[in-house]
Amino acid sequence: MPAAERLGSHLKRAEQALNATKHAVLKPVGLTVPQYAALLFLSERPGISAAGLARACRVTPPTMNTVLKKLQERGLIERTPHEWHKNVLEIRLTEEGKAVMADADARAIRVERALAEEFTEEERASIVALLGRCVDLLESVRPAQTETSRSI
Picture (cartoon, rainbow, N blue to C red):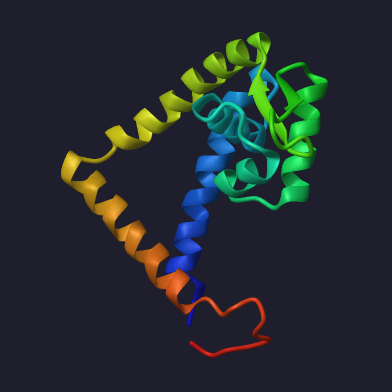
């Protein structure tokens, strides 16, 4: 099957264009797209653990630890022991982190709004529904991690 006929190629191209555009608008704030994603989820769920944040951002725990290290070095987040589970660190935005997040989010929202405005309300609803179907199908046919190979 030629690449031009593969839906995955089109999905990947759209994802790469979105990430490249967000990277460009976030660069003046000094954030990468993964760092912005972490700050976004932290702003919505203060106190989340690194493992929970990795799941929310759909990255591996080691990747999230690298992101968090950079954010902590910049003073944008703080990590404190959980009140009951001392081996779990809760992560929160610092005041500087909240300010950087507000600036970065305004920039990212401009990208999201420009993208949304390219489509009618009905088209946006269709895109969301169709992408949801893609996710549902792909998750239903994904081989279990214990399987070495499986044909779809």
